[in-house]
Length: 178
Image 1 (cartoon, rainbow, N blue to C red):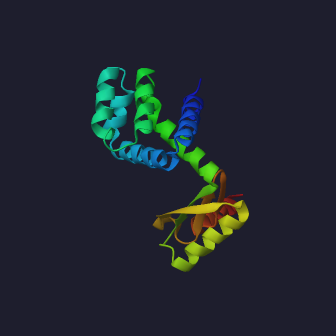
Image 2: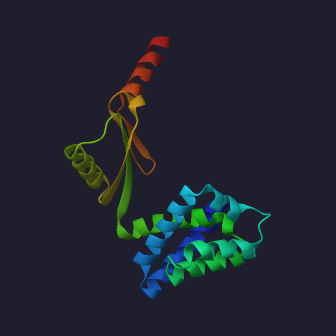
């Protein structure tokens, strides 16, 4: 079974348990915390994925880092995953949980890359466009890439709009070569 399938199953179980215990918001924050910590500390994920590190040591690492910072429901899933020898997919489980949470709350994430920082007016305009197209609440993540020269790249789910000058120049170059 693929990692994403297994991670999704654990995430579904966790979100159902969190709803039952009425701690969905708290567990969501815990999964965001886990994802942030594991993204910022490559060594943590390397230790969790390592076949050399024993499972009791991995659980001790998780206890040391997260036990006092997360809800008992969240730590319970860490404990279960460790006992099932699935520590290497914990990041994928956190990702899957966050996606499930967003789906249930009607939130869509939009990613915009532009050549300069967005003004407040442009930010509101992009949020409005995406909200009208999807019918969902929009969380916009911004990134500045001066290699675009001008314009923007907007990505929502598996759809992308590339209105950058770099793309237009590449398209023109391809037309001239043909």
